[in-house]
Length: 302
Image 1 (cartoon, rainbow, N blue to C red):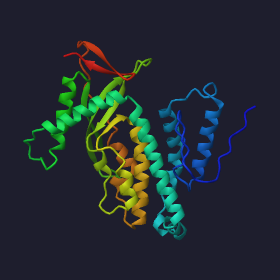
Image 2: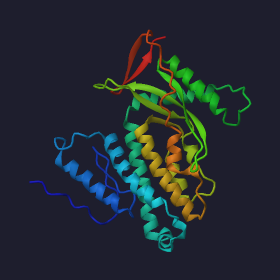
Image 3: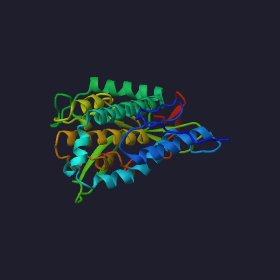
Image 4: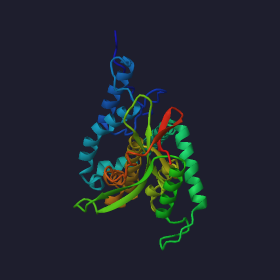
């Protein structure tokens, strides 16, 4: 007979070799409730829960948590004396930052293991593009023009046989967020047993997106764990955004600095939300399969 697992009260990360279980927000009772459900699902086995992919569990967990987090963020924490005391409590503060770092490292480990050889191949192309980039436009700087670099990476990926393209996310100005656009790279990949191709996102200056001038030391150490360039699935990208943006919010509250709308998670997510602007290869072009570590990148034969 199955006996529900008891979740101990100490707030420590829980790791599993097959599924992702962790405690990231010690102050959230919702978090404990949802984690209990996930742990029980693991104990019941695959026959009980067919939705056993890591990505789907991550998405389910955070999507359900979002509603409560959004409701909690409506108020002004800076005006809550009890919350301010909690912010600077040494024990609670250490628990928060330790759990955020453990959570981020676990997500990054999972992300890095997904299509490792594919990511390594793309990573080598990115490094070659950085080394051989010759930028002649007016936007160039000490690191080279990001716009020219993205185009150089896409060109080299296509020469390697990858189905790569530039994507642009655009959003309108609202009362919450300023309008804008963001460009990134996408490579289409296929996995065995799935007909639908999976997009791999490439953000060349990923870590830079989260750097802040007046952040606390714990936040600086946290984003130092991020890769300079992100190469992976959107599911992992979204979970990373949730962790880092929540940490940014905490850091700014500790520093008593107003958090601009461009720092919020919902705004950051819009940067990589382009869906309809990708130029697909012509149907009369032949296709080949480039197999890398169980993941097959769909490539156009030139």
